[in-house]
Length: 176
Length: 70
Image (cartoon, rainbow over all chains, first blue to last red; front, side, top):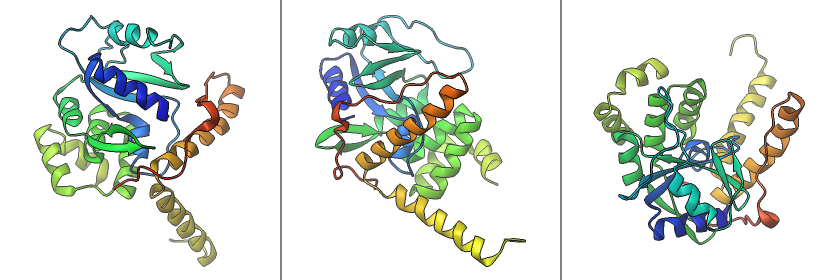
């Protein structure tokens, strides 16, 4: 995954997107026990100059390979696609453009990490919880349970995020 | 726990401890564990007719060390 992160850093440096952070199951795994996943969810802030999205499902977060990402990645020799992912150095990467204010905030406040000397970003655990609440699938509910048990959530920070994004009722429903 | 022997309670506690220990592993080690999970799950999923592809990282270059959860 080291090389995959290096490529993501190159894409950011080259302005394909202005900022990225790891989310999804692999983001959660940063804070919890290893969780099974077959792709790497990468949330991105698009550059101002940006081509149109290929598709945007109505009820779910947009699982989108923006043509700009696809072309930029292909230009680096990665042409293998799987479903909505592009395989970069052996890892299927799903690019998820920031699709609402919560995800935009999560990207802005993502924490900097290093992975084998390679800089990268992971969404904060509190934002991962909030995104799961908002997304609302069964697997999100399970992920919230695991994050509550194993991640060291900053309860004040989480409460603030939940309040600002109107997720307090869902939190109560899932945790009481 | 009702209806559960002391022995089983001890086993459950040990399992929970193991999960907490896994959560404290450095991130690269967790990534390696995820890849092992992918290999295990892929066999089962393929038998059910679902095509999944474990990650193919050259030389499994992940090493123990670098990033750890806060």
